[in-house]
Image (cartoon, rainbow, N blue to C red; front, top):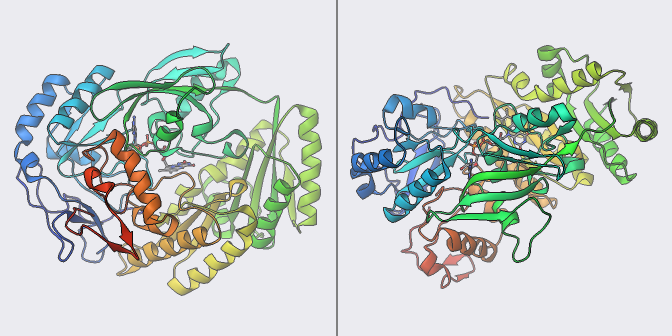
Length: 541
Ligand SMILES: Cc1cc2nc3c(=O)[nH]c(=O)nc-3n(C[C@H](O)[C@H](O)[C@H](O)COP(=O)(O)OP(=O)(O)OC[C@H]3O[C@@H](n4cnc5c(N)ncnc54)[C@H](O)[C@@H]3O)c2cc1C
């Protein structure tokens, strides 16, 4: 994350209701508005967002009044102090006070709010717990934040069909807690699981330690109820597997709040394995650890989890939670094997053998549940642990083919020297999902810019070696402008056409995911030749 030490306030200096005063950037047309990462003069990183609609801002009081009739009581927040809570998410470098925050508690309210906003050109940013690391829940100045926190109930647990029906504001961990008594759990387990909501998980297609074997959110969600931007309520999927017609459920999972608002989720629940044991493998180099990851998977073993930490991350985690990690290794793998006892014993022996062949200089197998928990405690606390050794850090999220791990780690080390910034590596090694944490000091002039440039170069390398820009944190605003390194103009236009089918007015979570926003009506006619965009008069950001 990019913690933001600067003065807190709306980026253009106005409070909501003071009228429109968007600061237009020079030379980018009037469809764009830059919001600064921070107000400190040392932090000039800017991000382009759609220009606020002056007519909407002028009608703020009337809009608040109407929304209050839809969501009575304390359902609408409009004071600057209370709005401040919603000005950012886990990507704290970017801040923007929303025009209003609306906190519905029924599906009918969500539907009525969206229908009203649709009819009145009011932008809407859905929000769960606000832990997004890509700025997915960053507000817009002329829009409402639609907070889903009141949708916090587990509606039904169906053990016979191995699924649970929950509201979107239920936290990821609460689903497992609700079914743990009967020996079940919900598999995707982001490190933020104590706070993040299942609605946010669906929007980001979130992952975690156990996704290597058990799949990401998309593999563990069976059905959704959603409200479309027009207010229409739809159901996709259900307790059954697969459905006829287009896979709209698949489309919605990972759609980053751009296509509809999730109001109910049917998740798959799994029975806990008879046995789970973890092994720590220490290596003299990150390359050797990376090669071991590829060798384990190459041998046909799919561990329940396979995580890697490099030396800076190991030392930070050990100092923080005392997990008994070895301190004289350059890289540490935590490999968890789960299943029936006999299978786990067999796999542990195989992993030990492969570790030895790959040059492991340290091996320890957990002998109790307590010890296994300790192995994981260090990994799960690695982000806050790194936060203790550096004033600020920037958490990246890219995915590469596993076999390219040693090469990419080497290139990151070279970049680290070139940018003059340390990097700690913590990642879902089995998935090839890297989380380099770039350490910097936001108060040191130029360091934030260098951290962002370093991060962008890492992501470009991920794409170059055949990987992708994001493994699980989403595109949001953070990686929006890098989408062109991954997709052609034609690819992106095709994705935007899908967005138009659901949200023709581009009112839902605008400014996210797409580096340029085309008007839906014109999209079909836009032809890009050698990078020259036609219709230059169309609003873009
Ligand atoms: C310390 C830390 C560790 C993390 N570890 C992981 C990890 O291991 N794996 C991982 O995948 N992520 C991780 N994350 C990122 C984050 O927790 C996930 O992206 C999570 O899914 C976000 O959930 P949220 O409820 O906080 O959503 P928000 O941050 O509130 O929103 C995220 C996105 O979802 C949309 N959204 C939210 N609710 C809805 C809804 N009901 N309907 C439609 N759209 C909605 C928002 O518009 C936004 O685009 C981590 C974050 C932190 C801070």
